[in-house]
Image (cartoon, rainbow, N blue to C red):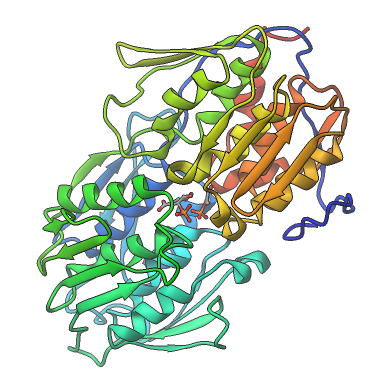
Amino acid sequence: MPGEATGTEPAAAHPLWPAPFVGGTPVESSLTVPGSKSLTNRWLVLGALADGPSRLRAPLHSRDTSLMLQALRALGAQFEEIHGDSPFGPDLAVTPIPRPFGAAARRERSVDCGLAGTVMRFVPPLAALIPGRTRFDGDPHARKRPMGPVISALRALGATVEDDGTGSLPFTVHGPEAGGSLAGGELTIDAAGSSQFVTAVLLTASQLTGGLVLQHHSPDGAGIPSMPHIDMTVEVLREAGVNVDDSVPGRWVVSPGPVRAFDVRVEQDLSNAGPFLAAAVVTGGEVSIPHWPSETTQGGSHWQDILPRFGAAVEVADGVFTVRGPRSVSGVDLDLSEAGELAPTVAAICAVAGTPSRLRGIAHLRGHETDRLAALTAEINGLGGDVEETADGLIIRPAPLHGGTFHSYDDHRMATAGAVIGLVVDGVRVENIATTSKTLPQFPQMWAELLAGSRP
Ligand SMILES: O=C(O)C1=C[C@@H](OP(=O)(O)O)[C@@H](O)[C@H](O)C1
Ligand SMILES: C=C(OP(=O)(O)O)C(=O)O
């Protein structure tokens, strides 16, 4: 049952996908993956705010990006698909929200966030700049994802937010009176639960009359997870001409000013490259990904350090990332706080490793698409595994796994974790593989192509 990880196998609510099993045959392949969700949705927000028309080359086309397009359209931006050179879909031309804000937008708007953290966190601060009211809601589990810091930030900046006090969806953001704006100034936010709370406020901060001085403070001294995602936000803002000072850790100063129109190429999604790389690791095969960026703020760049810990050999040469799997996979002790997004794939590799693993620094995964710590524990244990949840992560011990249903909880990364395990455990059936459409609609076909020629 999506959204609940109880440890007992829930009834399958969606079709079951027989995960391809390769037995002892090594997976050998070379492939590229579609554009980064995180970069695409940041650029779309900035395009909506820019001072002229922009273009995204090789953007991601998936459920999360189409929800973002719909949300920004409701606020007055326009998008057109134009022919580009990506095999994964067209480029996007962006016509920004007309100025002064509110002239073209509907007064009563509603935004479906689906289960997309980037939509539910990044769009409300933009809605707070545009006259009219915007109601935000999403999938049933979206109402369980934490939103409190974004709601409090908007109120502290002077916006009105109607909510039920639970710090979650649904809520309604009121924009200013026509011709009005938000003043900005100093703001403190507790971003221990998600880096997206910081990104949410930073993306629109240059549009506040006085700019913004944003400070992270958590009462128990907790740090911010997924920091590379905040570095990504700062980087795209700077590329769009916004002045951001991040020289003091945990503090960001954004000057008021225009967002410059841009023409950018979106990097491929290195987090979504993960399951394909993991296929080489768990089968002792070799997978290469060309066009690997030499410098990137994507958390997926951590694969280069993570995969060798399992005993795999990694090489990046001439822009091609190649991983060669070991004869037997070793367990790992990893702090994944910088790249929690990779945890489901990492956990899948750990589940088939020959020695125990410990994953730390990922308590905030309880607020992701599902409670990922509970879901990984329930689903790996459901296949005979030995996984224990800790306060901030997982302990995964070696155990003989058997086939069975691997529930995905509407979580794209749970579904792909099940596929990775199914490569080496016969009879794994992943529930609702279509949920990969959140960020990688081509997953089932790409997985089949990966394995073509690698069948036992
Ligand atoms: O800003 C972003 O694009 C993201 C930030 C991270 O969120 P958390 O900080 O909540 O982990 C990441 O896990 C998520 O997939 C995407
Ligand atoms: C946490 C994730 O997504 P979201 O952007 O919805 O937070 C994810 O993709 O792993």
